[in-house]
Image (cartoon, rainbow, N blue to C red):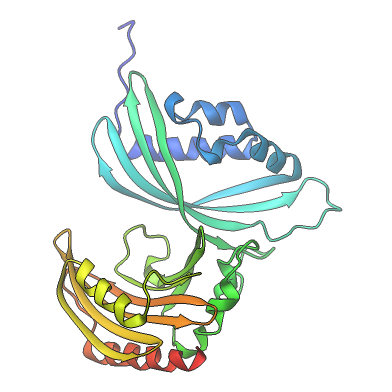
Amino acid sequence: MSLFKRKATINEETLIKLIRKLEKTFVAKDIDKLTDMFHPDHRDMSFLNHFSLMMTFQIYNVESQLLNFEILEQSEQEAAFTYTRKHMYTCVNEADENDNTNNITSFYVQVQAEGRNIWVTRYQKYSEVFLDGKGDRLPDAKSVVPARADYFENMERFLPAFTLENLLPVTYTMYNGSEMLMYTSAEEIYAYNTKETFTIDYYEEMEAPSIADHTATYLQSNEIEFGEVLAQEKNYCIVETKVRKKGCLQHEIVLSISAADGFYMMRYVKDDNDNLIEPDRRKEWVKQMLAATSYI
């Protein structure tokens, strides 16, 4: 029998085992073992903040359920993949009120094999859906809007203009001076690379002196195969573009609005290997974007 253990190699089985171990360690509230799963050069990521983890573990007991797993890139030594898990939180002290901490979160993960170890080198959240005490999604866009969001009410007034039955809110992203609400099709709610999305971006300021200047810059700065202004007034513009990215043709319709309370971009994108927006759907999105301008 060999006295030497084989070097670790990466395959689907080892990746799923790694994620199950990570989730089991989290639920067991073992901060040290959790940290040990990450590469020593990558233990400064926010997920591993010792104080934040300790506070969470003191307040809550956690149940975890793996919902989705998808390999994006893989070799024997490195891999990039996504996984989605559902966390249900119960207060350690039953007298404490549960403040809708329950969630379904998707992560983009990179791992690396070194010697007999497989280390996590990147662990990035890309979508989060908030749940009620029964584990069901909160209603409408509230399911993704965090309590610390500053600008959702600014964006919310435009939503009645859009028919979004086939699209579900999947994430809400906050940047310095801007926020974004993203929807995708029900079939792609856990996907990292989506084929159909609708987004509303809010910015405190428009980086152009006018909508006309913004539109001209937008059309010039994109490596587009086709670009056309469909409607334009002093405070808004609707543009249709087709952009080739990584061999696929991305077809989008974008409404840009300069309003008294900020700058908005509402964007419907089809990125489906040359399957463009169907004519009837294109017409409907343009109609809805024109309707949205009445809420300026």
